[in-house]
Length: 363
Image (cartoon, rainbow, N blue to C red; front, side, top):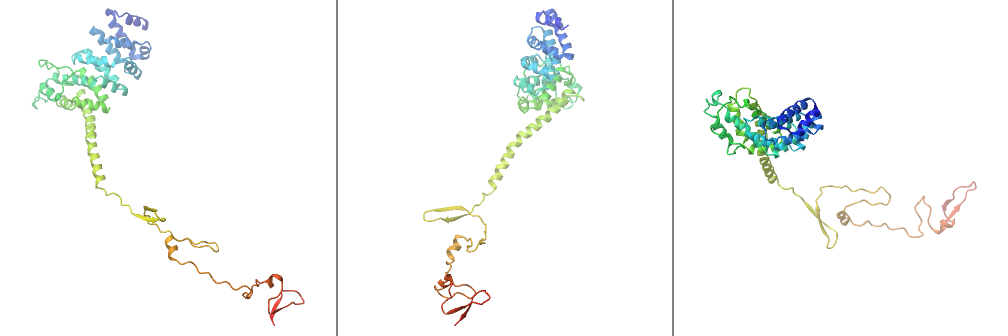
């Protein structure tokens, strides 16, 4: 089967081409790896620009089935299929091709890389245009908008807020919807926008395209359980957080600047140290009291500050005894007699017979 389908795709006979693409769609649901391996995604992307509506519709449905998995999303993005899908949204909410293209983009928007790529292809305003058309097609008689005094055309004009949609809806279009959720194109478009709403760059594009008043209009005219209204409410929560964070940043920065200006600068005290003639250094004052440390060694001196060393007088030297004078009792004399072994002048050594120390007596 795969071989015959491949031959029909490459032959590109209009009579059998749509049926071959339908076969690709069936294969993509269960054997997506085969579709990717045979490079049928590239052929499907080329067929998006076909002049035959059935071929474009079948190609969009097949790509939507392939993009159910991440490998298919990567293959579609690398093949350049996002921009043709976005361009097919311009056929309007009544076109089945635009609905199928929105479904393919909704499946692709599950990938973070594809979210930004769709936004770069101007996918945000095109997807919002489908939701606007669904709002304009909604019959106000079947919901509470008539009781509130709103009509579908007036709600659409208010939702636009000066931003023209990608496709202008004629004023004479009939209101064939009771709620926006009955439009499949709007359902898929809202799903794609909801998947993309977590990206900051997409949020900025949504607010710039007037998404907030549009989603509020959807909530006003939708019936209970409407899928578009549920997704619009979810996106409003995204945009409320984004707008609050954006508006709160300048206020926080201004408050921080005011607090910094109100705080006085820190006071620094300095002292002047004179290290000699012509050298004066200002250093920060340190309120530290260092006690003097006395030396534990004999003959050492205490460590004092320079001011204490200038105020204290030098220590007085004690007079030395004259040379040759008798030393204190109990200490040997330091004279020549002591070194020579003789007695001092005026004394006789008495040597006991039993040996021992000499006893000095006076004459």
